[in-house]
Length: 244
Length: 104
Image (cartoon, rainbow over all chains, first blue to last red; front, side):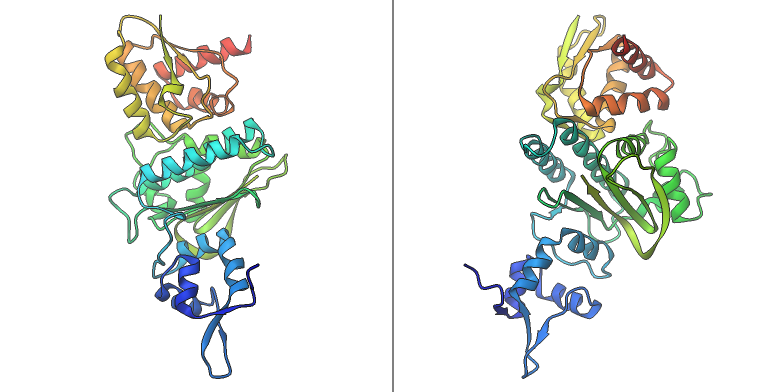
């Protein structure tokens, strides 16, 4: 049995979390993950704290989306390119399909929602990633959540390309989920998020999607309608949590 | 009548580039004069983006002679009504025909 009260130094802690030492230092500064201090002021982490943090994919995804310095992620949390995302999505779909606690219908529709949101990150940022390309993508069947995040330009900047009058993040998200509009005009596209909205409003799938200082959310329990609100922190790209 | 079995392209069909790629792969086997039917059996998920791209290319290729076989696939049933509303062209005609057929 693993002793979870074990204390580990920063180098080992970084290895356990699959990130760099520098990222851990940045997280300490920002308060995202604080180490303990020994009597001699030596920095250490408790293994149990690391395990708990490691399992919190919502926290890791959010930290990756909002940190000013992009943290390194382990390869099982990060898809640099679209083909990697597609391949992991197919694997997730099959895993959900074979899980006796998830219906075939739910497996199909969750995969649709994740596929559209993840694909949007690539389609709208290719050639324009501000710093790190690709997306954070992780799921936890036990907790029934999936987390996606990107450090892209965000929904407002994307839609302003075709509709410069969009002034706020809230307006951008409202338009994205309600109108047939594409940030890649004149391509005939822009219907994916409308399908995501219909699915999450009618089936047992919840969604939180943040971009800029706006967020849309719809609960898992139905009936529920999607609502747009102001968030506390700014996210330049997008951050999504899908619950089921 | 020619039939395209989408399961040949995988269990999860996602993204526009891959919808385009699937059409490019199947095109040499298709006769543009002969109607095509699309079979959704044994596919877990088709995203609206993939389906839109694939149907748009196919409809352009054979002037809309496309029939969607009745399906219970939840992802297809979720995408079709939005596609029917979003498009005002051959793709909308194809989707509306399929929706009417499945409501019978």
